[in-house]
Image (cartoon, rainbow over all chains, first blue to last red; front, top):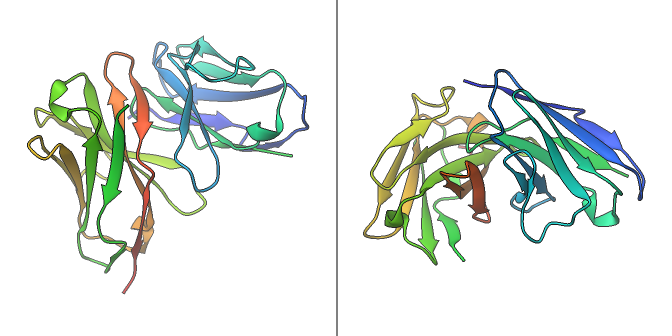
Length: 103
Length: 120
């Protein structure tokens, strides 16, 4: 099975900061990498699919990049509503361990 | 807009079988083009993919759970189900059902999740 590793597991940031989260696959997954945001008590919300495609309705401050084994999610200017936990997922399969973005 | 809703017992005894159903509305499971997934989240922890099923009955499971998991589909009722056998307290989690777009290879719709507690 392909393993997904996210880093960091948590980070502290301020409103307006640029934040980058990394996801690494144990072997090449082409661009089959998706990013989700989860807030407490809620189901995850899809942000980015196919490594870099922004889901309709998601703010443009979110962007994704990468292919093969190394991927990033970047929030260009952190907003108060962005404090949450972020997960990567290989296609419809394994998830990364998550990154909690805290104030 | 497809909607998914989990249902089933919120409390299961150790060694018994956990059984959940996901009812799909706003779309037909039989249309094809989607995998129907189960995902869980232990309290305060990350997401764990359990497995998925296609309307034809094709299944694919997480290898770490494969020996205890069965996912089935009932197209006449437009729902799919999860059975997890020989549960322990370690199976206490919020269980989500979800839909994955096969072509885009993305989980694009989720149920609200249901907490299942394993306790005697």
